[in-house]
Amino acid sequence: MAHRLHITLSALAFLGAGASLAPAQSLALAAKPATTSSTAATSVRTADGRPDLEGYWTNTTVTPLERPKELADKAFFTPEEAAEWAKRQLATPEPTGPGTYADVHYNMAQFGLERSQSKVAANIRTSLITDPPDGHVPPMTPEARQRNADRAAKNKGHEFDGPENRGLAERCIMWGNEGPPMMPVGYNSNLQIVQGPGYVAITQEMIHDVRMIPTDGSPHLPADVRQWMGDSRGHWEGDTLVVDTTNFTDKTAFRGSSANLHVVERFRRVDADTVLYQFTVDDPSTWAHSWSAEIPMTKIKGPIFEYACHEGNYGMRNNLSGARADEKKQQGGK
Amino acid sequence: MKKFVGAGLIAAALPAWAHHSFASEFDVSKPVKLQGTVTQMEWINPHSWIHIDVKNADGTVTSWMIEGGSPNSLLRRGFTKHSLEPGTQIVVEGYQAKDGANRANGRDLTFPDGKKLFIGTDASEQTPSAKPDK
Image (cartoon, rainbow over all chains, first blue to last red; front, side, top):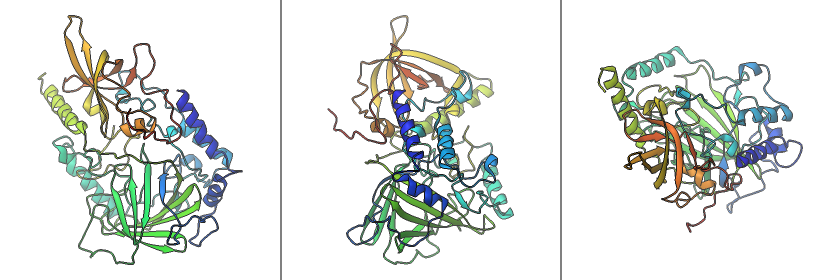
């Protein structure tokens, strides 16, 4: 308990330190969207003169993707409000009631999995979404609504027939956070960036895929070659790494997107402890217009650890076995 | 409970605490409280599993498997595979598997004196010990 409190206070101290030290710059940048021009902040460089994005980072956040209803007209907190918001978000949840479905899990605090046990970058935004200005994902097109309804209907009533009917995350194939765009996940929201001649590599701890991003000016793969994480190509615009990703499949979906998803990510080191990560997603098959978000990523001590999800994924077998037991029960057996 | 958007698709919003549905694996109507001796800790992803032997009133022994959290975060907090050695006495509160097997989720794990397992070790912010095993 003492440990958890310590970390919580550390996170809050960090969030509340807008008037001094490194977070001040992040807060200022959050208030004024970053541009692509180089700034004095990017003083750390690799041997070949590029801004140094290397190291271990976390994108853990207390900021929701979409702006909460009660903050509809408020795009930014004051630093004090941000600290109060973070305090509430990082508070230990109310205990669950014994004998309820909510109680059937393990104690997150006990296993070190609560967000309060991670570092959290300062952010005074009330939503990760920066455009449109209302902080919300644009409405889905009728085509996309139909496509997603069809997908859901296809599996309805068959959710536990076999492993193929389970979601990709439960099958340890991919998790939704991996993207691109890369999003925070419930825990272990850590990543490592490595730069080399002609490539930038990003490992996300969850669930351990590595993105190999050519920065050598080579073109995207032919349009008929599709990949689960798309095809990413990077280039530098001033001190900003810009990564363009196309060639997705229809096997993954970012908030209901299609294989036509186009993602542009921007990475900029805004101070010693912060990489500002911004992305714009566009998919005319899904949304009426593109939308953008940004997540400040803060430096952590490495290393990150391998999350070999298949290593002991007993949960798959156990869930299916539980479903068979439920079926027997419904049929009057034991 | 987690909802899937369809076969083969990524569930966009996983609950913060799990990568699969605990409620479809364990039976809410079968709470268990077990005191036993650790025989093995499986230090594996996506979930750690603790094996314990529980002595029954008639002197026989029943082996149980207890599902716990991701080992990555435990390692960051300074735990190693030697931190929970065989022979350690622990108390587990959780719910038994729906299929009736001797498996349970580790809802709450304590030592017999009430002290919580995995809590209270030194762990500064995201600082992995990465120390070699002793």
